[in-house]
Amino acid sequence: MSENNTESSVGKNFITTIIDKDNETGKYEGRVATRFPPEPNGYLHIGHAKSICLNFGLAKDYKGTCNLRFDDTNPVKEDVEYVDSIMADVRWLGFDWDDRLHYSSDYFGKLYEYAVQLIKAGKAYVDSLSAEEIREHRGTLKEPGKNSPYRDRSIEENLDLFERMKNGEFEDGEHVLRAKIDMASPNVIMRDPTLYRIRKAHHHRTGDAWCIYPMYDYTHCISDSLERITHSICTLEFENNRELYDWVLETLGAYRPQQIEFARLNMTYTVMSKRRLIQLVEDGYVSGWDDPRMPTISGMRRRGYSPASIRNFCERIGVAKAANMVDFALLEFSVRDDLNRTSPRFMGVVDPIKLVIENYPEGQVEEFECQNNPEDPEAGSRMVPFSRTLYIERDDFMEDAPKKYFRLSVGREVRLRAAYYVTCTGVVKNDAGEIVELRCTYDPETRGGWSNDGRKVKGTIHWVSVDHAVEAEVRLYDHLFTKENPMDNKDGSEFKDHINPDSLEVRPRCYVEPALGKVEPGFRCQFERIGYFCADPDSTPEKPVFNRTATLRDTWKKIENNQKK
Image (tube, rainbow, N blue to C red):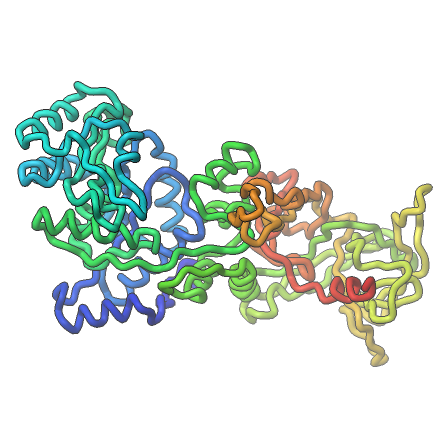
């Protein structure tokens, strides 16, 4: 099965209930047309993934269509880099817009004509107040706003000024075009919102053809209307904007889709604000938008998350009206659940210590067959080389072990995965008293990791042959923030005050099976007993680099912690 298979449905929710009712009444002739409308001013994150899965998923379930539309109305913050990354992310998640790629900039001419129509109808005017003065006139939630002194300009003067704005006769901020609605409206958004502003900036698609640009709220509803969208699905923070959405289209006499709001994704130990993610990148807290600690889709892809795991996560959290906080652990569960079924197993030693089997013949090499994935019978097996000197995990040995510790200790016997039983006979320490090498003996009658005399051992540990191991760099990732809700500033702190200094640990000298020295960046696998890993783009044939995608449950670590209590 392809990892981009999109068979799963978005499931039943309050949005599908609305669509079902609309289809019963024939509101949109039984059509379902959605859209995913990102602004190309940053990289997509896991919250956008929820919206992508919802909009494309609804179109799939109802045999409708979903457009990809870039709402590119602010040339100051937008870039082709973001456009390209967004398209790559949507495709990687397993969705396609076919021939339905649109840009709001495609409609700049039509948007201008509609603005002229509003002016001629007495529903819009050119305001010459400064941005600060406009804010002062807008009022508060408790106090109504005040009319601008320019609100009653004649239609002819407004048409003249607006055309001169378009022709570049004025500087940024000198004038704006505002809707003429109601400065006393209880909905502050309806207090003569700005429709156009002057921006003498180069646009990534239209170049210097325009020096006035429409505002998002004005552009978005008209773009939806022109594309004949049926259900315009957006997050809850746009609920108050719905009144303006409907006002613009109703005033213009245009086709009107139905705006429906759902709760955006909020997740523990992370931030979803694009503005704050930009801060993390620009201030150097992370290496870039695709840093594996970032909640961006590109960061999660680099970390090793699969498209299926993200889609399954979005399906699990569902679609709700009320805002809530999703535990990051649920995302990790979805990742493990998918990778457990799909990832081949290999042995890798992240914190190595040498183990010498003293009674094993020097120079002898054997190969042992290891199953690639016990969850997938068709995954086959591989041969792994074995020799006298091995690397094992330092945590798999304890000199003074508690009773319920079943890994290696002096005088104890364990199974080397798929190889032999070994018994630790002693240790070698350096001048500082640190253990640098383990000495063991093996039982040649236990080849393949099983005893012919019926004796059993409780511990099984993994290993890599020193003579055949490939040296690798391993990057271990943790939460980027130490606080469950970094945006909670009741204590006067900022979100950056809670950045986890231990969110990245680099292990430059780890050892993996020889087969892992040849994998391509993006290759996902499980290091047995350690976790899931992904080959990083920084990998080279001389030095592979692996990112830890997710950990496995470490019951032995829990036992150790309990012993300390």
